[in-house]
Structures are given as structure tokens and as C-alpha cells.
Length: 376
Image 1: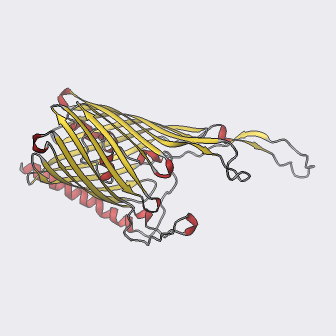
Image 2: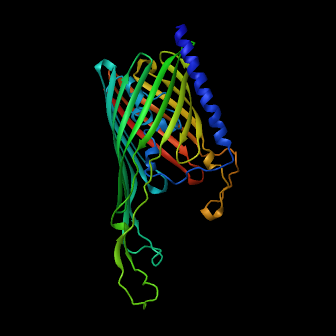
């Protein structure tokens, strides 16, 4: 037990040391942030309403089906086979859906899983300078990934996992593909008789995406050589070449501590620091209360809430962007607030659950998230 406490406090000290330079990065006035330099950003939209309600600060706590998204190492602690589906109307009439299923193996020593995510919209009018209301054509955006997960417990306190993803991006007729890896670790121990968990995750390490398709076919009229007569020429067919765009790589450090830990009642405090490659670093805190098997009825309840600091959004917006809100640097904004809850029922190894979350996106409004899970 003495060794366990030493390791736990060492882990906390190490995470605190990591967050000190992170805080300095957040308030740094110099700005060389690589905004708009990545493709397939739907890979950052999450999985399930539980993780959304906790603001993404879920990597250390996730040991259910959604561990395949937040931290593949957590899947090694999956108690029984299960599946989850989550689909919701996202911002600007887009839709995001996520499905996953996973199976523990070797008596719980390891687990495998498969997950799929899709994002997009359909039948949007094609507008041009000559036809600002549409020229009669429509286009679709369809982005998707399929991922295989393997996770293993290396001891009673440490697990690691990996995702291998195939990513497909279709914007009209312009298409691109990529492959990516997620790598995660999970350390779990006890502090003062309370469980504590720490996680390190790096997501979406992979190849670049270069789009091609008929939407990039154009007609080019070459200029006549200098000193020659300007004779009218027919446009010659050509195809534009897309720049290679990287994937939205995300590094997470997360800690979760059970403030209250009883057999049927639990209150967990979560915190997370995140460093993406396409925007500024952020941090968040969440709180989850859960009660299981209420009155031996088989029913369980949960309530969740979180706030995520997003310093890249703390800028002065102008009316030119269509907003009438002014956000001063360092101000507290609604963007980042999330709340939610869940209800479940289980008997024996069979359990079903329904989760809900609402997240505020500031000037863009908010969105409702729903997910349904089953295990057996």
C-alpha cells in the first residue's frame, strides 16, 4: 500500500508539472497557431453523451465502449461485451453518428473492439458568383472513419491500448483517405482509500489527406507567347492539385479522482489538459455523480457537468462574421459548458443505458446529444 501511495502521488506531481508550462502557453500573447491547417476535424466530435457532458475530460475515467474513442487503454477494463450507438443533429443542420462494439478476452486481460463514425450533410445547393441562389445542382459532404481497437492490462494498475483507423473524406466529388493511430495508457491506483486514475493519450497520428475528383477539373486558357498575335484559344482541360492536409492530432493528459466512493454511490472529479495541433491548448474540469442498483431495483442514475476552457475562442468577434457578441480576451464564456445525465437498468450481466448531454457552443448555439448502450 505504501508503494501504491508513492506511485500515485508521483503521478499527480508529474501531471501538475506538465500543466504548468501548458498554462503559460494558454496566456501567451504571441500567436503562431496553425488554424485551419488540418482536415477531417470531425474526428474530434467525441463519442456518446457521457463523454460530451464531461467536456472531453473523460480519458482517465472511460472504461466503457466509448473508451475506443477517448482512451483505447480503458477498453481493457471492460467488464462484459457491449455496444453503443449515438446519433444527433449537430450545428448548421449537420449530423454526427458514432457506433461501437467491444468484447473482453482472456478473462478480462485484454479486449478488442470496432467503432465507426460518420459526419456530414446532403443536398445543399451549389452557388456561384453568377448564381448566388444556386445553379440547380446540389452537393453532399460525407466524412467517416472505421477503427479497430486492441487493449491489454499489463498489471492490476496499468493498461495500454491502440486504435488503427481508416479515414474517408468526401466533399462533393473531391475525395481523400488517410490512416491514423490512437495510442493510450491508463494508470489506476488508490489514494486514501479512493480510486484515482491517470491517462495519457495521443490521437489521430497518421498520414496526410490530398483531395482529388471531378470538382477539381477546370478549363485553362493559356496566355499567348510574348510578341505573338493574341489568337482566341479554347480552354484546355486541367485538374487542380490539392495541398496535403494533416489530421487533427490531439494530446491529452487526464486525471480522475473519486471524491466519494461507496458501493452504490460515487462522486468523481475529472480534469484534463489537451494540446491539439490546429488550435490553442485547452483544459477542462468535470464532475459526475452516479448511483447504481437503487433500492435493489436494478436501476441506476447519473448526473454530469463540465466546463472546458477554450482560449482560442476568447477573441473579439465582429459583425462582419454575422455575430453581435464581443468576447474580450480572458473572459468567461458559455462556450465550453456542458451538462447531462443518464439512466440505466441491469439484471445479472444484462444492462441497458440511455444518456443525454447538452453542450453550449457560444455564438453558434447549442446541441443535444443522445446515446443508447447495451451490455451482456
